[in-house]
Length: 134
Image: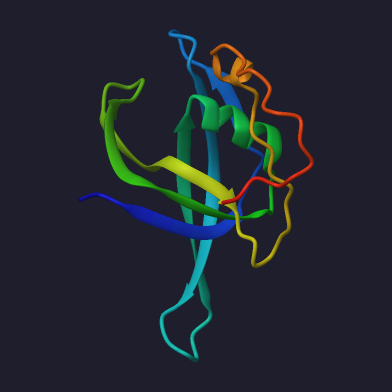
C-alpha cells in the first residue's frame, strides 16, 4: 500500500492549469518540520504536491501560501528526460484529499453545485427549517 499523509504549511499559492484533455491540474509545495533530536535545530523538508480534477480547482480557489494543510495521497517517483537528454527523477505526492488543518484555522465549508462538477443540478429538497440529521 502506498499512502502518505503530510501536515505542513503551503509554501506558495497553488498553480492551476489544464492538461490537453481539459483536466484541471494543481501544483503546490508543502513544508514539514522535524528535529533529529531534542537539542537539534529544526529541519525543513519540502514536498511537491499535485492534484487533479475538481479537487485541483477547489484547492486553487480556496487555499494559499502559508496555510496549514493536511494532504493525503500517494508518493510517486517519476522518471523523465531533461532537455539535454539525461534522465532525471522527480518526487511528488499525488493528493487524493486536501484540507485546512483546523487546529490552526477555521473555515466555512460549502459544497460545489452539481453543475460545477459537470452534472445536472439536483432538485431542491422540501422547504423546512429543520436541520438534517447526520
